[in-house]
Length: 297
Image (cartoon, rainbow, N blue to C red):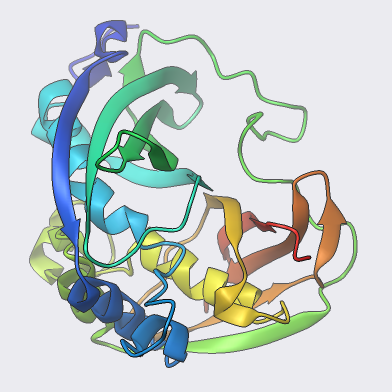
């Protein structure tokens, strides 16, 4: 059925970029600080091996490209209906302060789902020599919007083939609470350089059908990933290869977020930690979360 709120199949393959970004120490430290990180790996510029980037930092330089693709592919009315549904990041190699990176965004997939149209952006970032640094598959669900894409090949459990690693098979072995301050969305917006007014402007949020401003999905995921990495002996220095999740409920401000998960376990990709984040209303804000780490010799 074709309606005014419709995404045509022709959007698949649309691109934006490449766009260059300078990754400076100020940006890396600000992002970590917005998450409440105090580890020297993220903040100490005297470290002989330099600063580490938080695993979710790539969302900072990817955001302008995501906006550029949406501006070409979607009307403003459809764009306002988008919610971050899935996220999968591959880290090909650690990035460093002082280098210039280049990112290209492409609409990689469009599928029909019961709540609306599901669109995946692939964001590929390379260094000055053209070598891959990070690749992200950013899935958005446009609620109440139809599309020309095929129906999603969902499993009987309702999960797409690339949406996280499934539910943990055992009860969580660790649980921690994170206080979400009334100003966290504002601080995250400025430190990440990710501007979306539904996270900071109550009037805009309510006009979009939200009950109030809500925390960014990437901020929620970053907070959860930080807690998951603390389960590894190397903590923030643990070498992340991939991470993935599905998003669920909204995180209000102020509130409390409960993050829980399993112990470090072996997998085909190396070691990994599974996790989830539960919003204050009891709904899962992050589901099927997994961080895969390189093996440590």
